[in-house]
Length: 215
Image (cartoon, rainbow, N blue to C red):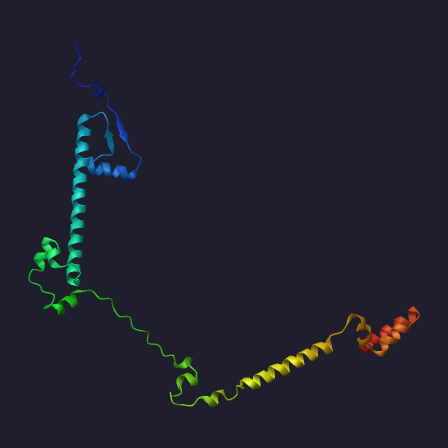
């Protein structure tokens, strides 16, 4: 008995394949109502191929439809705003504006155009945080010179600066002590001087104790 040559030998073997990815499983169930793929089943694979092409065409039509709607409403807004002449718009848009003239329907056009809301400043009472001068500012013709009467003139400021520099220099010279004159100008009490003259240890301890109690 000869084998049937019209049937491929591999078609007698069943090979089943399943996906671990949940997204692919959901798509397979949506297409074929099962997540198991029969790889060696010619009819199953042909049906799967047709279903994928069909779904792709449906999704493409849906995307084109949404894009056409967006373009339609975009051109309507451009015509209302006066950016795009109605003669150059899409055919459906031109039909809508066939009886509309922007010059005569200017009021209606302004109502249709979306304008951003005007932001108003917050209603806050700042008077508790203001000084008396800020609450009662002087009028433009008021003489404000008495407010600055305490500020000295330029010549007086120069005199004050020179006196300050002279006094500062004099104080620096008076307080500055040369290293070799330090022992002469250093102040010492009489008790300390007597302590320096002591010749034995007992006298030094007595004088030191005396100085300690004086302090």
